[in-house]
Length: 568
Image 1: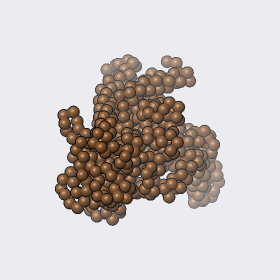
Image 2: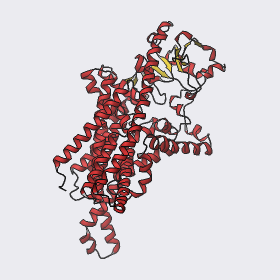
Image 3: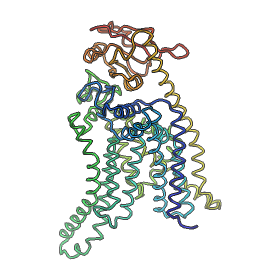
Image 4: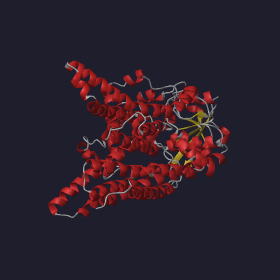
């Protein structure tokens, strides 16, 4: 079989990109509204920037970090790259959500291309026969093109897709340096590329730090190999073993610094302008709210007003609760994020992890993915049940695809040897996985499309009912709501997050900002409100229902209640 040419590689990359983009375009067309709320946030900030209002949000969804103003300076904890990607096209083609979806789909379509390239390197590392290697690599790219979790967030202006692209690109460059460190000078294009990719990842999600640490670990190993080749003569000339060891340590340290210098400087150069903006806006160049999130007792602590999470309140929960939170975080991250949405790839990929731990090609991705999983599970076990690991799991899904496809390829090869199958059997694993993954993709997309459609209808109906009831949203802003970002971006009004605290605390919030309406969903699983008002208590009498503004489902079930905040 003839070797793969650059033309073959370019055609393969283009084919995978077009396939992935087509799948994501169909998925995006099925999602008419920005769900979940962080997607609406990125879209809203990009829209405000294009309209000349700057990097601001009309939603004040967290009170943990000053300044507490409306409109609120954006990105106190999240990072700006998703909005930066959407804004240029929105400036040209309009600020609708449909326009904002396009850059995310384009960026996400690169993930299958990178997956193909990563697995092609894995096949080369394993010295697979040519046809089998191509089937494994291209098949992995096709699987990534129809893989539900990757497709879903490629259809939205969200952080998941750009973070995945940046991290996987960085890991591919890392493994190429690790496999061939010759010529890894300070200005080696591979090292500069690692820095650019990590810098972009750092502008997308805070979890980029774990992949930077992964490169530091890989670079230390590579430095050992480089120094062993460069300094043998010097070590041999030393009379004592201690002197020889010192020469070896110095050589390894010098090689390590050379490997880290360019990536670190380039990544820092990418991030420093943003850090300066954060320092000037929020008083810190670091994600200051991250510490508070680590002390969360419930997911709704991100909305806390008077009962903010602290180290003392976190410790007061006791060892049993702290341990239970971590068990819940572990189960959520494995079951809800990696297994169920990723069937059948997720379970197969997790089972195959022990067989890829020695792979040089997958080592950077494996180290970063493991650190991300452990950090979100152990440090942010409550926040992760609200999406922390979910949105950082794109690179982990790519790792699972590589692990699953490599394992299935080995299984098919073993069966083929026993049953004397021909080389064409190498395509069986990719075909089987795509056949099983396609229905899961359909379920994922139709599920999120249903949520998006219902959410869009709910807020459109809310605008109508409040107008008819004589309490129009725009004239009563700011409004307190349990879904502050959705309300802010659908109604284009200032919105305050509803803290899951007492009526007196919410009254204190309303008085501080001059809010006159409370808009709250009637969902038992979403906190104590509005049921807390039925129990009476101090301050409950100040929330006067506006029955005519209630939003109902087709069967008459209450979905959203509106209250006038009556006490001055």
